Image 1: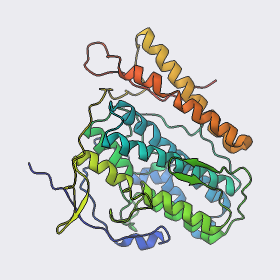
Image 2: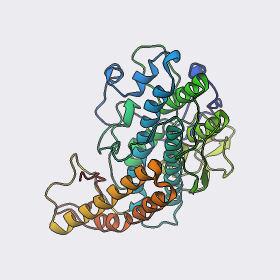
Image 3: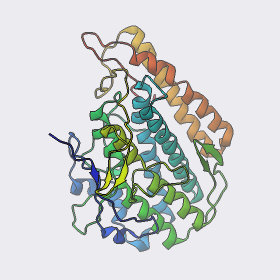
Length: 374
């Protein structure tokens, strides 16, 4: 079978467009629905704390309290993307490879997005609950976004790129007035911005952080223009992008969906007379450590050395989450520094796990990302 590598060029939409204006359809690289247990959109809408429930609130009711609820979901959404991407990155043996560099850039972006969501939440009088909001894998994305998608942890493979990484970052689709339609991440962030614009809440910079994350500068938000700029970058860089591959930022990097698509198709995106196609320079699929898919509830009865590695990893991961909580609860950059230091400590046990064969299998163990309860 010959794979169609053409991308129809979508019409550009910025975050300043309202959710209703998202009715202009966009076509993207075909990606079949991931093989997972689907959750009905109507059922999702009835669950408390879901994006669908928040979007059902009339515009007049979307004040500061609504924004705090929505932004806590944003914190959980951004956090939920980091563990699967870290597993994919750690599994790549050559960190100088194109695939490794693409994944690492996206990880940095997601950490920045998490910082933006936390700053926005603090600006409207909230406090991020990062450790309490830590995701469980395998499982859905927080808030009922992309229902039917099961996010799991695994080493890098084309299946993992397609069914998890590309599925998480899939660009937003047109909104529909149908009752069962599920919101995308792009719809969600558009609604959050509209909530800021309509309610004009008082914004406090107290407790917000200012630091450099990857190639981005995290800055406090003190005006509506700051909010617009921050959310616009998050949406256009990542999951909710509605832009063409031609629309790039100062670093000239494609949005996350297209970056992962290059890994999946093995070619860079290029504009041709047929539109955008994966016909550019090769993006060789890298040699990887064969980390198996982590089962529900984690590894069952692992050997004692593996159990010690898993506990060491999870203890360090819990320190990362606790330090991030402290950073936006008055601990500031000192607590953020502790979180970064602890995060660097995740790699060593992760690699040891990924190089330890599972008895009777060719694949290896990998981190579970279990937040511990003390």
